[in-house]
Length: 166
Image (tube, one colour):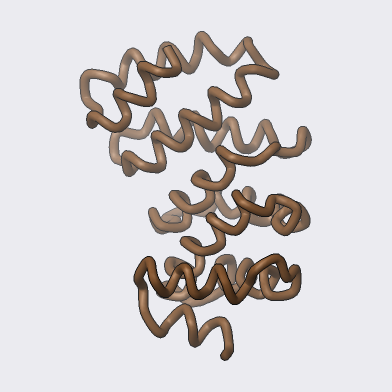
């Protein structure tokens, strides 16, 4: 079955698991999934992100050649929440190449500082920044400053991640 048809067939956990099983550890199928995630129409892009994020977290070797494009996509204006959420979901579980760490940090700082950003995007971004702070301890004061300013206005999920970081 064609991957785009599988994606459009249903948007559910069961279908996501079917797509994950279909793609498996096949680089070519994963490449197609990433292509749909980055270049598909609105609905396909949203739906491709969920299985892509789980596969990328479980098999980071499959996503390596796509990281620059996926991370670059985070800077697009008016990016759908599902695209941001699924990208930062898997980025918190992989080793981000050094040449992309600055871009990722910039995006994550913008996400956690934006009062309108979705809570999941903020929570995943905070985890990414925490992971990167081990290599770049100089970012810790800025993270703490943003978290302290945002904490009174955030949801319980963000507060929980923030407290773990602090």
